[in-house]
Length: 480
Image (cartoon, rainbow, N blue to C red; front, side, top):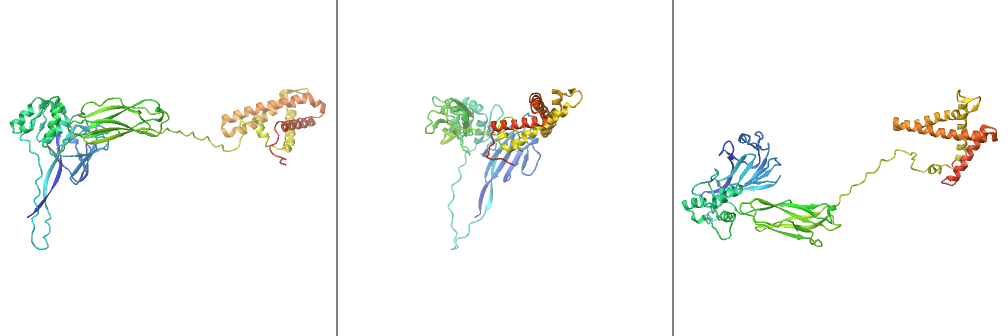
């Protein structure tokens, strides 16, 4: 006899939009949804947005159908993607089941799964030619259908038991109040499902009654809560060691029923008391709850794990690691490399003279003094700078000052106009001082030697000998 195989066809149905009830069939692979234009592997919902200020992105989310498994992933959309009223984190992947409600912008899409049958290959005949009858598999357990849809006062309608789960995830307070008022119980009693009437035990709150009732419904998908924590790591900077830092974390319920978590602190060896909970765990969680941890790392702690905050619920535990960051080391950049040797005013003048041999000093200093005396004598011959052949200081300093300015300008020209001007000024001042020394020598000792040339050479030799005493040569001997 023919054998059939069953597979699931996944459909998105407009639950809220311009065309409620419109259906879109999903193909295998990845399909993006948003208000962008129609394209291959993209489902455009621009015509369903309406006049609501909540808008979706051109590519809001991605749905992936692999085998019979359908998942959704948010694509970092500005308004966020919601599944059963729970917002997905960026790039968070979540499995979908029939009855889930996706919200993108102002549009809501109900996830539907339809079973379709297709012929399957018949098993080959046994070698002896006689057919064997395979054992009949037990029928799949299917929940009893909801006899009649139930309409809420705000217009929401539940047509299946799964719809009660979806609506409770979206509007917990609405379903809770309707159940507490007894209207859902009356509907169940009228349609022969008194076995599903809500139970009320001493000490139960209306939230506890709804939680128990959702757990007893014959739904086609698990109705339990689901734990999620954000973030997975809490870190404090190294400079916070020795003080108390407060960091918050969230415990989210991404399932349907109430989440009753327990929160414990586990500290690493040697760090007892470094992690504390500033807020004690409260009651059950419907959507999410925020908690604060106080972190007090000891002095000198850096780049270490202090321990973790462990959140447990429904047999599932998730850890939030507590860490102290490593101190950031900022490297001091190296200064610019000098392009060539040069004189620096920070170094002593003697450090430059120590590299000049004694022999070179004995002929350089007299030659420089003789050249300077020549400039002084030449300046004395200029009009208006001498009086009756008598040397004046102005005449003695005129040409040396000009020569010093020219030499200074040439030395500073590589640094631009400002450096050249400053170097020329410094050279002129140095030349004036040198001319003043020569002028004083002329007035005081030149009469003794009787000749300007001899007096200049004597001054040069004297300065050379003084430099040898003040800054002896660094090496033995000298250069020729």
